[in-house]
Length: 169
Image (cartoon, one colour):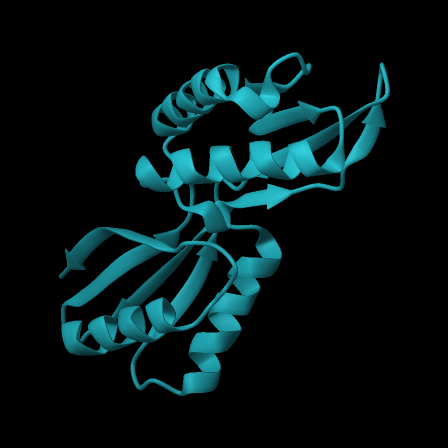
């Protein structure tokens, strides 16, 4: 029987790096002159997978987002996996914005990846949804590498991670 190789496609962020980036952004916001005297906050809720930004107006909220985004990039956290919510009014005439961290592929995104691979009509490449990951398998490692390259080239809105390489047989 022929051996088959496979790998898993998933997405996510390293929460330790997110925590470090939030700490660095909080320090920079506390030091910046244009934020002095204003109630500005960056709060990370690891359990909920969200970051909450608070600022007195839309301009400062955008500036805080840019500081946070810069720290995330420096810590190699994929910014594509951060989803900004809409700015809403909070207590004391300030604005609040919740940023959601994407951990794992949604079922819609899993189906989109499987459909994309099927539309490419790659020979001998099968894909299967397993929870919040997509397992891609093929008897040919070259076909798997081709599938991986085409997935990297296509924009699915999040950073895809490839792992759990296996050879069964």
